[in-house]
Image 1 (cartoon, rainbow, N blue to C red):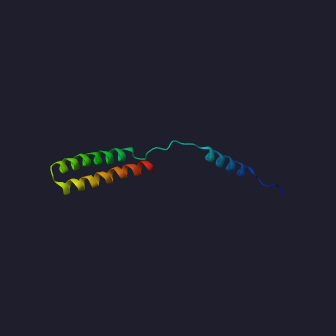
Image 2: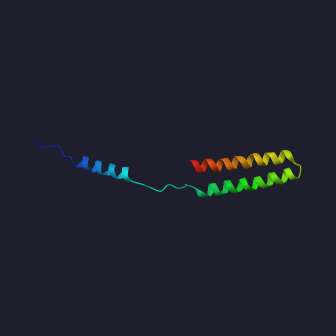
Length: 80
């Protein structure tokens, strides 16, 4: 009777060790999403400030609300 073949176990162990030691650089999957959301937020912030300055308070507050939403989306995207 022949002994057990351990060559498969050694290969599996070696590949698991390589995976454990693997280090990578993790970046954004889609960096333009952050840029576009930030740009939209900046435009909405300026438009909201302009509307408030022109005494169109309701429209200005709505624009500022959406600007804050865009900036929070950028922050969330950067965090995750």
